[in-house]
Image 1: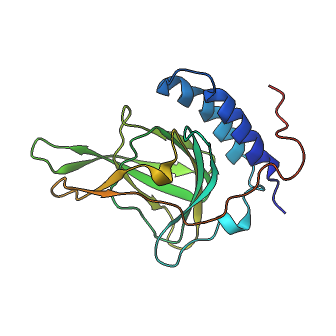
Image 2 (image 1 turned 30 degrees about the vertical axis):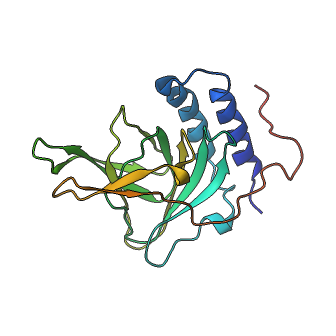
Length: 201
């Protein structure tokens, strides 16, 4: 049985970090980043049903959605060699690697419209990185391994499964709208086992 209270404590703390504050992306990222690092430092809490890779494509499982759509927490599960298309987010996000490793490659628009590949970043277990329209929002992500599953925990400043976003053709820069949705229809009940969080502040 997973120690689901760790996720519950994270959700409580992350919600407090944005609750009652004017929207300030930099401040929200700064407050939530260490909370996410603390969450992924322990790998005993993610329920098995939310860690299953798909046979052909990565899966994204909703773990928590704020009722006011200010925050969502998602597990991204990558089968061996799986990757995303080039895509954007349109809200801020934090990504922390729980298992395995990921490779993220950023893209930028050129004067001619095509996308130019930028920096490539390898994220190992325990690493946390940020994305947003302000910081750089277009990238592709791949499992760093061809022989094992990798899992990352994502936190977004919105309900990412309902956000209208785009995938890109790197050769032309052409955009195709999409709404990702989620791979699951049920989410963990974080408040089914006692108090609403162990964090005292």
